[in-house]
Length: 94
Image (cartoon, rainbow, N blue to C red; front, side):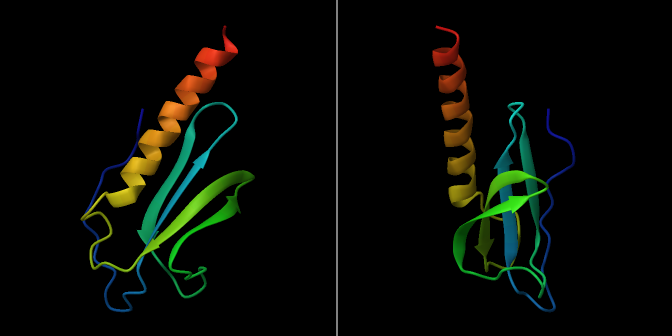
């Protein structure tokens, strides 16, 4: 179950971009964060691998105006992760 609500957040006035962070936890759940980038964040364009709260995650920086205006590759990555997790569970139970 997902908690929270999706909003179109403007990252003005600094407009450093929007960060999407997705990590897969050992218990099969996901850590998901989407927010405006701050000066203290790694502002590398595209996606990088990071560790957050002891979880291996992927952080993607988008420099569009609205954080949630386009799901783009984030949705594709999330669906791929869910599919691979399901596939792993099926193979594990065989």
